[in-house]
Image (cartoon, rainbow, N blue to C red):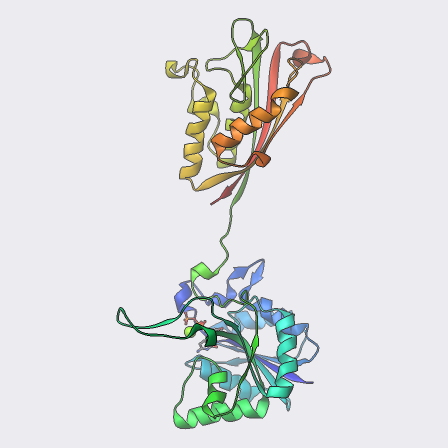
Length: 376
Ligand code: CTP
Ligand code: MG
């Protein structure tokens, strides 16, 4: 089975509002149009690919086609999609029995849909790919409903559409003759009074039309925090917002919650906003004895204002004493609640220092924290 492929790419992508044609926008590491071109390139039955493009895009398309090994042509399109496809059909070089027409603006096409279409066309001669609509469709004039269409019969039509070459050529020529225009090629065959067979495609085979159709670029940020506080005898030991029974507490301007401090520093670091010393200076009397959890809430407010959220937090507490394993889970719970994430996204580890150094001599506690953030 020898198939010619027409890729309609001669639009200007007005509704996308991008600088150039939307088909060149990057999607998962390559231009939108490359997704379907590479797919067709890998299908054995495809003997020629005709890319229909605007004059201004000829050079860009030419550069991309260097990566395609199937014989190809690049031709200039027309004033609307119908005319572009017609020009593509007329310029196919071989004597093709079958032609598959696809919009470059549909990058999510799968080989499975193409294969099913190529099987169906041999039986039905004109095949459309589509999906039953999930929404109820109403016909509206001005702002008033004039008709509610029976949903059971409605399909949203996509590309590819696959035809016997002579049939689609005849359909296009008849349309030109009678001045019939349509937004897809099946409609031209319908206009001949011939039947069109529909196969169920894939809801994911979206047409990229407006910016909402592009996947959201989620930003991912990483921060590291480190803090040390010295032990003293006359203060409670506060770690991760919990008071932990011990004969010593930590010295500091605030409540000296070294865990929460490391977490705040990691968050500020990921946001590129300095450190806690800059935000809550220990020379400022208003922070004296203050709860570090309260300060963490202020940092989180900044985070949420920036439309970011905590992805996960990993904390290591290095303390010779007290034994912290009984408190790790409660610390995770406390911090997860405040940060509005599930407890599974907050991990607290505790380690001793094998008696070495200032931690080993029980002079203080060290905490390290890694935080990842993502955009909402
Ligand atoms: N197309 C074409 N020739 C035209 C107009 C459109 O080949 N004269 C192609 C587009 O490149 C696209 C497909 O037809 O792959 C579907 O059209 P559409 O999604 O409307 O794309 P654009 O016309 O580029 O976008 P817009 O209507 O927003 O300008
Ligand atoms: Mg258009």
